[in-house]
Image (cartoon, rainbow, N blue to C red):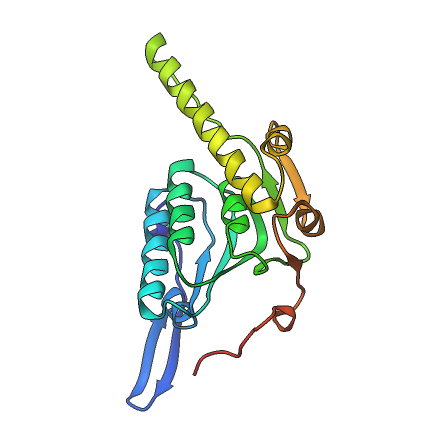
Length: 208
């Protein structure tokens, strides 16, 4: 995905030294907010990971807030973000706005227990990884085994974060499994459905 194709809003703020301009993502980063609002590919994953590592280094004890509105995407890119989330020492609050599907749902579930949220009209979907393979028979066999390995690993991750057995998750992800925000809460993907920022425990006002 080419992020240059998107119009990025600018924010202008008054400081003691005059006006200062930020792109909107940099301004959100000041408040320790990372926004994943695209399909997940290697470039997007690298940008998200860089932001997460920056926030970890700037204050390893202060919460990070990851907002997700993504249809998913590359499994390997998504797992790179997932591993980074687990690597951080700071708590990670995850929020689903719009949708968190496929790898997006995995990242939503990967937030700190008790700090995973969905907005009322959010949609969450889990399923098994898919991909087309072609080439020599031996290559097809190798790729098929790798897809099955990734399928098992994703099921293990979801089972761990949702408090379910791998068998339950494997059954549910055999086909596209859509959930409303409340259904995702019952499933264990999120901890609460919130309509207002005021309902998020420990929510603070905007940084100055």
